[in-house]
Length: 341
Image 1 (tube, one colour):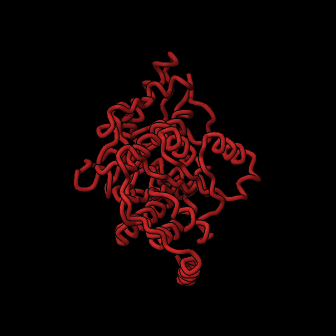
Image 2 (spheres, rainbow, N blue to C red):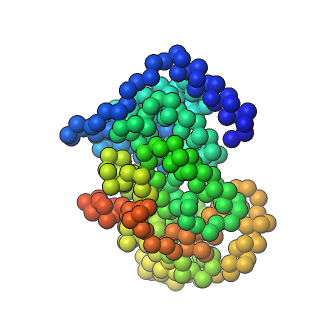
Image 3 (tube, rainbow, N blue to C red):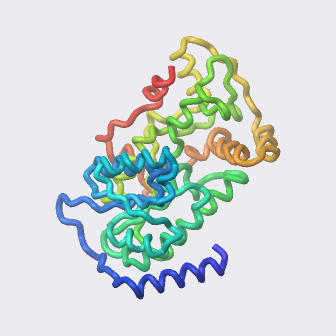
């Protein structure tokens, strides 16, 4: 954030704190009580799953929504759905420090699901959490950290910059002493499986499939509802406090070659496999324009470098979701693909 922007943010925060008394936030949840959850970015792709699961799980759930969202028919329908699900709407956004502070003061846990364009602006959320005193006691912050582990990847530009911003927010949260859980959700299952990760496609391939690299790197493809479920399971769990929550169920870990073979068995047909050497993938990234270059760089990280599975989860920094919550009946890759046959 530029110095002028930081100065403006500090000015806004000081002004709001003068206008509103600071609330005491160092309370402890009573037995059986569930934390109050605020989702910022609840009408976005990831956020809608987190919001719905939070409410369904019995958490008093709040969604920070911009009034301008009501002018978008898709988001307006989603907001109406939130209303009918007893989700409390708070109108405001992260660029209005007064509304942001007011929202945070009402909850115990803040979950950000903002998109890539707003990742760095999560500094404003960190400042607001501090100003509200919400970092004390049982409160917790889950920044928009979904996807690959921001600290353990070998991504190239432009994906590299996005991961660097996520890592920067992680460092800021830790430096400020705010309790956190970072969710490394890995790949979004429905998003990838509905096309078998074929860029520009609208359905899974039935004749020819393009595979980056040699197709042997392992990736993890999780159903979006499961990502929301594991995220909400973690918010009151002391085992996930100040840890990275990795969502890596064994049944959802596949190489691209294995995934294509599974798809071939389902449709009863052998596909032509076109392998793109890693050198060509890198060349394609350099020659592509936004946003295609970003998608290619993410696919390079996932399907060529194997960034989701090429390290071990150490207890010092992380925990694995399906091991922590064996009761969760998540949709497997095998089951997910059945939707598209």
